[in-house]
Image 1 (cartoon, rainbow, N blue to C red):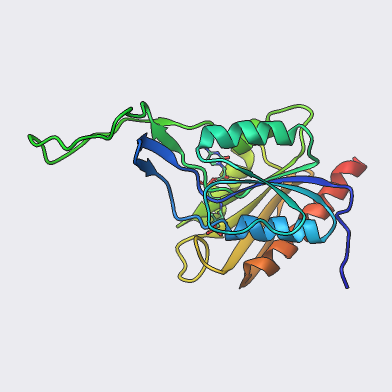
Image 2 (image 1 turned 60 degrees about the vertical axis):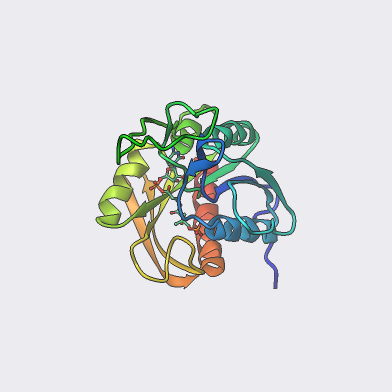
Length: 228
Ligand code: PMT
């Protein structure tokens, strides 16, 4: 049976990678396929939520009943996210946002310098989208992700607090067959409860199933938040 327990909720989700241009033909990016974020969008929409999916460049089709907004760079993702968050109850940052971009984007294709075998790029930090949304007032319930290759829980706890999130979905992206590009994923959920941080480990499973388990936890946090 289809449970429409997210009816009337407005949810914004970011997904996929961002691309940071170096010149007209090159960019910096990462291996995010968008599968995790799209699975979340599909789960929320199936459960009755009104979903806006802010997507970096991926090859996936938008799920049924999901409004998709296409962006390329982190700056574009930030503007779309700020606009959408203002009219959302829940914001989920699943995108693998590039932490840095080139300080200047070359107008013409960069040329090889014959005199040197090395090339130096100067990068500047991108704005943090999840932290920007979490700093707004009023603001939606904010859920972020943490992609780590070691010390998963320690780094995730630090990100949860530092970025002002309500909950974080921590995934180990060094395990074969999980994380970036894979169909399966495992996660450790961490969220603030009174003065402590509570946790729930979700074992490896299809991203579509994991998405439903994440939605369950977010709905219960949202209900608690509304009650306080
Ligand atoms: O897309 P798939 O192939 O399905 O892979 C899924 C995934 C591994 C990409 C996904 O599960 C995941 O972990 N997404 C977050 C990836 C990431 O960039 O993690 P991070 O630990 O670097 O960032 C922490 C959080 O801050 C994330 O919520 C991220 O969206 C956010 N962030 C990061 C940098 C930035 N400039 N702005 C942000 O909002």
